[in-house]
Length: 468
Image (cartoon, rainbow, N blue to C red; front, top):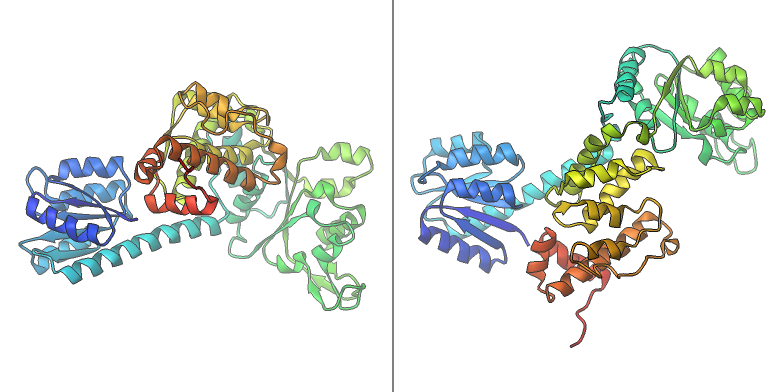
């Protein structure tokens, strides 16, 4: 259910608009002045604002400007009893969706409200899709380690030098590779990624160099390899330490001669590719063990960028966590939650075995399971880096004993994070509904989501009120 705010100093107009809109099943609040209206907009999430232009205390145009400065995508419909073309144009220039004269025509009002809400939904969805489509995030942090990486990227990216990126899983090696490509002379050409660890050794050569039809049993048609696809651009070989020795020999030849031959083929193909590689292994030890070619190592390791473990740059955790907090809340269509200083300190003290990737997952978990402000107790209860934390126990210290189950969760029964997230979300919503005696409106306000969203969750999880 869409939530609307009416700001108008005429009680009769507010009452009329409220009756009309509530009859159409909108959730409506109203206020008689712009100052308090702005305060409500900052505190709550509204889907649409209907605002009078001529008001005491603060002019409607000023309300519009200040509100859009705080929430740029919030649709505004301006209303006035002294409407002119000039006023409508001015309102439009300042960002209003539309302008309606008093007394409002019922049909035009409802059509305008519906169109404004549809536009607001489209704007939000477009931003989410763009963010999901673009994999190149900013490299967050201002620690000495990260500052050096950013400086190295600026220096190295415009050149053709090969780069070997090292670091633990989840530390951000792929992100460094993406920025090296984005800031290079090849940015307009493709960045092709190959996860060497995810491809069976017998298929890696076909994946990299392609194959001719009939070259092996399942080769029913010709295939273009990643080197050809990346021609003119950048090839990123992720987890290259897991590449087979035979494939390493062919990659070495491609780097030396800038030529490749498809599996089962005889024709040499020239390729113009810049190669970036990454690994979580110590390649010097792999060379000693006979698992990696020294000559390939030296070809790849022209420039080395080591991405530090998150525990080596804990001063960056607040910036990264707040960025994830804002991004995930917006993806979920909910107001951005706050995180207490104690919670942030607790996050900085965790071991972070999964690095930045683990931090992202934990912030998402905390957003789902915590109230409006994420506290230190929430981190202890829900972050669960070691897999043995009793989720229900930490809530007891907040006066929420039994919020989930009061017993330890068997994490082995969850095959992936999504299964665990659904389980935790279901138990949290069930607890809140029972706590509020199944008052859906009150529960939606309590956990700070729209009532329609809560109804969808109730249906999704098959939640039902226990028979009394």
